[in-house]
Length: 306
Image (cartoon, rainbow, N blue to C red):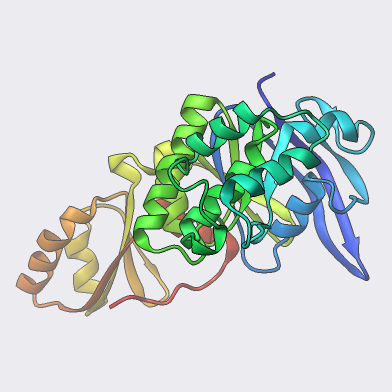
């Protein structure tokens, strides 16, 4: 089956607020998806409906072709999830945590599988240490190990890099890539870290006000011609615009001049050309394409970086 997870016209109302509105998307096997949207857009509510923590008012979630509504017992074994922080017992060792959750599983899980999962998340050297001694990154990986015990085909992670230092973020990113490429697991990652999603994901689903507004192909966003949008705060505008037209399509936005589909390595030559034309350059900023698409689609303002 091409789509291990399908969400079809999902709706959810809480009180008088219609939170999720005809939400629809489908994930392809072995791909990594980012799930993006402003606070209050419905990301966590959508995830909680997918994993059957709350029921939808209408619509359908299918996991490996099984309806989460009418075939729940057949659907849930195919999905693993960490919603918010991993639920771990700090006074137990990593292995004792895995054994505990394995014993709770409906599907029988062998000791061999426990050892394999510990090795898969690269915790085999620390698996007999108490979890209270683990770094935050190690706890995140142990939480992922717990969610992988029953061999799901879809893994959902809610803000997996929260609190991680740069090395922890890189290590987790490398591990998740291997999990998708080598084990064929489909990953669905909710995050506010746009740069992390840009580096990690194959595609990004962007939502606003409870519905999907776009799905961005990250392979295109990483291509040379579409990687960056450059913003310049300059004066006078008319002269600057004439100079910048030699570097690409120029338009005005929020009091700045914006050049799209240019590599950031063009910035020094652009600044030099502007200065030679007598233009004052007060600030420059470049965005990765996902970031630019996100703010355009959600109509949020990004603080300018000088």
